[in-house]
Length: 192
Image 1 (cartoon, rainbow, N blue to C red):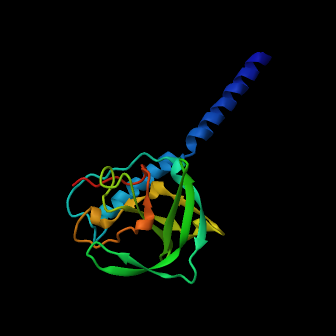
Image 2 (cartoon, helix red, strand yellow):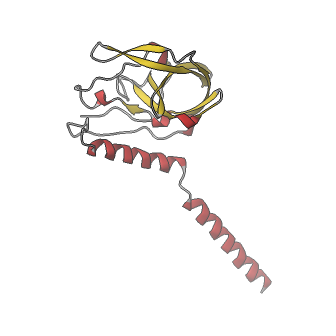
Image 3 (cartoon, rainbow, N blue to C red):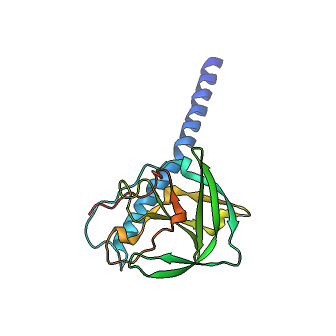
């Protein structure tokens, strides 16, 4: 009788463990849900850049591309002249420089100030192949900057609106933000 009760209790505990593990969404599931929401919002917004039906695609999420970078703030929020796709230039507020190491390679990128986020426009070795040739960007929540550290989640890399239609004018990532690696996470090329 005692063995039966112990066995039943063990099964109950095992069931609770399995239920608790399966009930918690993991990063992969959360990221896929964010992809779906992003796609739906982009397609349904009033001034949507999606003029033609196309195929949205994303790399598989990979937590190895969530990096904690060292952050050095810009002195006095310097203006940075950013090239645009129509050959014009816009003034962007340089927030600072982030540096991190990935696969033994030291990487430095410029981070720009926006109202509610920081902006990291970048190009990498997937651009023009698996991802949009003009580069991508990551919006970084301001809360992800803590002292001299900033969290950059490249899984949240998105295409500029120019990837969907040429009628949009988009920033060209500065040469300082070319990442000499394949950032194989985030949004892939939009297939029209």
